[in-house]
Image (tube, rainbow, N blue to C red; front, side):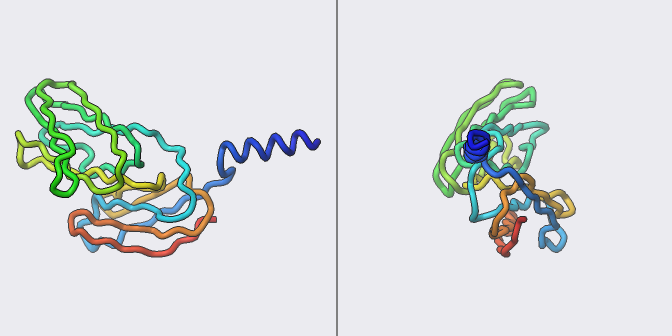
Length: 179
């Protein structure tokens, strides 16, 4: 019996929390609610999410417009159009990457190891812009057009819920408890 208990404790320590909760709601947006980044600060930072994400250039639009990722994630950026695009990524005023993607289906990868907000432009099509938000927490979501969001798989604990409106550059914080 003692071996079984020790095995269970060892497995629990390796796999992380046995129970996980979720949080859902609607961002405080007052109308233009799409593409807020919602995330939790504080508490455990272990991740069960993928370390790869997909970012596409299609019909002269970046999809998704806002892409939150966990620090260390590799983003696969694809040209989904039959004409030239490029990917010009800035962190502040500093160029992180500036690479042409001249062929449809061409994919390039960029790993994001530094937390922060990255602006993504296509120099060939000035109307194209997007954001990649690199976070230290695996607990994040973006809002739908009506401001709704859901973050699941959250370990129990007390967190700060952050609503970041990239368009207006505003941040709202509130404390939440996940049981």
